[in-house]
Length: 130
Image (cartoon, helix red, strand yellow):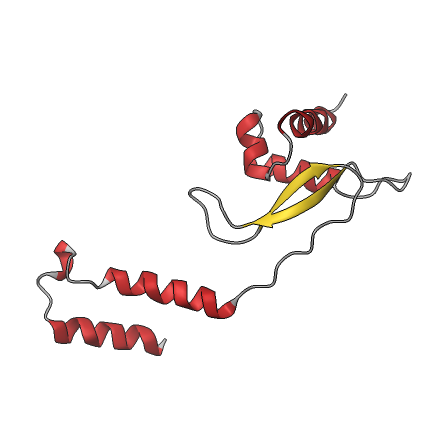
């Protein structure tokens, strides 16, 4: 049996044991890397020559520790329709980005204490222009 075949079996066993999983969760439960887990899940999610899928995308989630915020597929066993990927919310993304940028220049930072308010306002103005 090939290494890929073993990974597929491990992934299917993990899904049957733990239920719905993301690629990162599968990697945490097995000895696979995150990239290998994602590759295996993507491969198993496709239809075989017989016309069946072994897993499907149950839903999409944004919750994940220590990683960028974008939708991640949650996989489950069975030949069902995949959940549609959510469209990006541009207003919410911009609001979150601006809030993060504004926290950088608050006066409670030790590094910003030496700056005058005018300097901080000028830096914010330059950031908002770009």
